[in-house]
Each structure stands twice: as structure tokens, then as C-alpha cells.
Image 1 (spheres, rainbow over the protein chains, first blue to last red):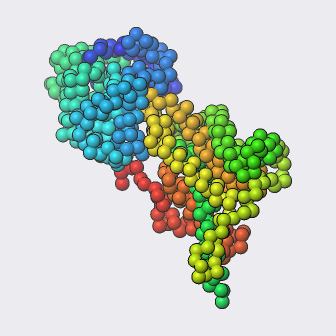
Image 2 (image 1 turned 180 degrees about the vertical axis):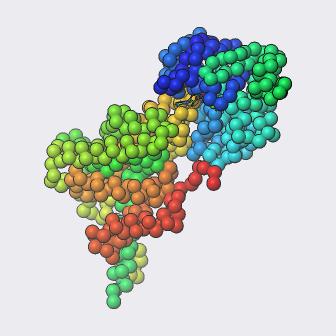
Image 3 (image 1 turned 45 degrees about the horizontal axis):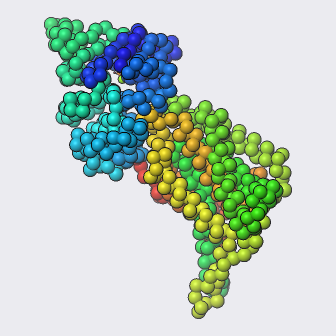
Length: 237
Length: 320
Ligand SMILES: Nc1ncnc2c1ncn2[C@@H]1O[C@H](COP(=O)(O)OP(=O)(O)OP(=O)(O)O)[C@@H](O)[C@H]1O
Ligand SMILES: [Mg+2]
């Protein structure tokens, strides 16, 4: 997927300015940045719930910006939104079935379900429970499982660690890494847990007030003084 | 002293009428339950959708006589079922051009979730349909003539007593049709891909669009189905009751009571809610003058909600 010169605004407020990001097939790319930088906006523009003002997003050669929202999931884009957004009044199993709403998802349903249950066994135990009654961590697992159920070509995860205890966060990160390594799914991740996220990824972007201020591999970014000071809390006083 | 036999007979007949009328009310409530309980759209024009369903039966069967060839026994019930697709189309159009502007993705996340807009728009639609109905259909009460509405099955519980219970034929058949239609809708919503996608689109429109669900279309379809279901119930009522274009006003109260009573968000609950209202109405007829019957519905309504604020069959999907 290539994003070129993307500009997005809410009324007069410019949330993204001339952003260019490339995610190669099979890659693990992370976007970090402070609150309000425009990370969620970036995801929403890719999945289509927010319109772009300028620039272009190409997914396997096809331009996304003119495509209706509901079509984009069918291309293989799975958006696991910030704050989980599970279907609260549907059961865990029904949530996963909705993930498999796309044709690819339906074709691979049996295999995906097995895989999801392998990654998150609790979802099999709780299959008939209403998703709204699950704990935050379990809801995050449903949200990720729901994304996986679509058999995606690109899995976008917006702050999966939000509001979770460290132990659960570690588990979630481990599973995301597994999905990338073992299933070969292309991953685009937004995270506040910068060190852990960057460690998993092939490439990282730093987004600040709507613009990409830096990008590079894990090593390049970790060696950069500004990144160390701003996001990792290490460096000279 | 009231004669006990007469009392028993009256109670049993109220029970019979309560069950049959209650099932028809149940179906009517299921239609609103889908629109209000599940889609969370406030629709004050639901009574008028019911009214239109009733007139569809009158026109298909009596005025134009398109279905008259089916005879006075089957004809009216087939016409009532036909009111479903007619109002499905009508409801979908109403949603497409008006309701969708104040509901769904457009208002999801806004402060009132579009409820103020829905209230005003549907009240307006309700007035337009009532008065438009007056112009088109006239103010003379009409009804569908089926010989069944003046016949009854007699049921004698015990040879020992001199008690007989009457099941009005038109109402009993209507109740049967209502149960079947309600079950079909339940199966559609609970177990089919389409039904689940409609519930998902209602639950979280934004997330549903990420799944590849066409949320606008899902909402339109759900609204159309809700309109069609209530219209079928109206068509069934038309087989035993005569009515004018203002008939919706009485029924919209019953529908909202039933849906809230049964518990928002549950189709089964809406049906039981409607059934409860039917019972209360028929039993109150034993002791209260007709003017007070709707008041009795509300007294029971308030009492039940005092004891069970989530409704009889409501379940909470949120963590406590
Ligand atoms: N619907 C909206 N209407 C107006 N402004 C918005 C809207 N959504 C986001 N914004 C603004 O756009 C900017 C970027 O928001 P965004 O949610 O993309 O940030 P973020 O990087 O995801 O932040 P966080 O880390 O807190 O999730 C913020 O200044 C925000 O106030
Ligand atoms: Mg965000």
C-alpha cells in the first residue's frame, strides 16, 4: 500500500498534512506519535470513514479514495479500531462471523475460526457470550479476531494496548507478532507503547501534528536522540 | 353476588380474546421493536404504517378486488400478508429520503444520536399520512368483510359446567398468521447472515462499515422490514375491526408500551410485550369502562417497569 501526499481536514482543522507512507506486502509497519497527531485519522482515511482532501492511497495498485467505504473491506483491508468497537449486543461468535462478511472471509471461515481460537482460546470458551459483557482485554481479542476473520491482506491495528494491564498487553503484542510471522499478514500498527511496537516492526514512522517527521528501521529510530527523549524517556536531562 | 359460572365464563373469554388479540399486538410490536428497539430510531409514524397496511387490505380485497378471487375466507389474510411487501417498499423509501438524514452513520456519535431530528420528522410524516389518508380514503369507517369475523369456534372446557369459551375465527386465524410471521422474522434476524449484518449495522454503524457491510442499505432494509411487519399486523387487524385514517393514534401507544415492556432490543421481548398489552386490555374490559382501557395499559406498564426497568425480557449487553 502506498500513501502519497495525503491531506485530511475536519472542517478547518488540518489533521494530516502531506503524509506519505509505504507499507510493503508482508511488512510490519508501525506509526507512533503523541495524542492528537492524526494516527487514528490516518486509519480512518484508509478504511474510508473520513474523506481525504488531497493526495492518494493505492492498495495493490487500486486507488482507494474514490471507493465507497463498504467496498474497501472486500479488498482485504481490516481495520481494528481504537477503543475496540466490538458489536456489544452480538455474541462473540457473531462478532467473528461479521468479520468474515467479505467473500474472502467466508471462503476461509473454517480455517480462520480455528486459527483465531488457537491464538485466543478464551474466545472459544466465550463463544455464546455477548461481546459487551466481556472484559476490556477480551474485547480487544474479539476486535483482533474479527479483523483476522476477514482473511485480510492488510491488518490495521489502532492502539490495541489501550487501557490494558501490562500482562495482557504483552500477550496481545505476542499474538500480533505471531499473526505477522506465522500467517504472513501485512500489519500496520499504531501504538503508544513505542519501544515494544517498534521492536516488532520492519519500519516505523513518527507522526507529529499531522506530519511525518521521521521514519526508518527499528535500529535507526532507536538510535535517534529525539525519539529516545520524546518517546522512550531516555537520554540526557 | 355475581354468579360464579358467569364470572368464570367471562374470565375465560377474556383470556381467549387476550391471547388472540395479544398475538396480533405482538406482531405489531415486533415491527416497532426492530425499528425502535434494535435500530434505535424513534418513529412516531409507526401507527400510520399500520393504518396503511389496513388500507392495503381494503383496497386489494374490497375496493379494487384484486384478491377477491381468493374468496372471503382466504382473501383478506393473503391481502394482509401482501401489505408486508407493499409497506416494505414504502418504508424503505421513507427511510431513504427522510429518516436516513437523521439516523445511522450520519448521526452516530452525535450528542442525541439523531433522536430529535427523528422525532420531528416522523411526527410530521405521521400528520401528513393521517390527513393525506383523510383526503384519499375519506373519513367513513371501513373494514374488510369476511364471514369469519362474525363466527367463532366454541370450546367447552368441562361438561360439568355450563361454560363455553368463544374463539373468534378471524382473530384466531390472524393470531396464527401473526405467530408464524414473528417466528420467521426471529429466525431471519437471529440465524441468517443478512439478519446478523442488520443487527451489527444497528449496534455499531462505524465498525459495521469496516466489516464491509453497506450500512445505509442495512438500515434501510431493517426499517423497511419493520414497516412491513407492522403493516401485516395492521392488515390482520383489518379483518375484524373497522377503522378510519386516524386509527394509528390508538395503536402507536400500544406499540411503544409493548416494545418497552418487553425490553428494548429483543424481538421476542417485543412480542411478549404486545401479548401482555393485549391481555391487560381484554381483562380490564371486564371491570373498566372502555374509555379507561388504555389507562389500564399504562398503569400495568408503569408497575412492570417499576419492578423491572429493563423490561420483561430485556438483557443488558453492557458490563454492569
Ligand atoms: N471528528 C472529528 N472532528 C473534528 N476534529 C477531529 C475529529 N476527529 C479527530 N479530530 C482532530 O484531529 C486531530 C487528530 O486526531 P486523531 O484522533 O487522528 O489523533 P490520534 O493521533 O489518533 O490521537 P490519540 O493518540 O489520542 O488517539 C486531533 O486534533 C483531533 O482533535
Ligand atoms: Mg487515536
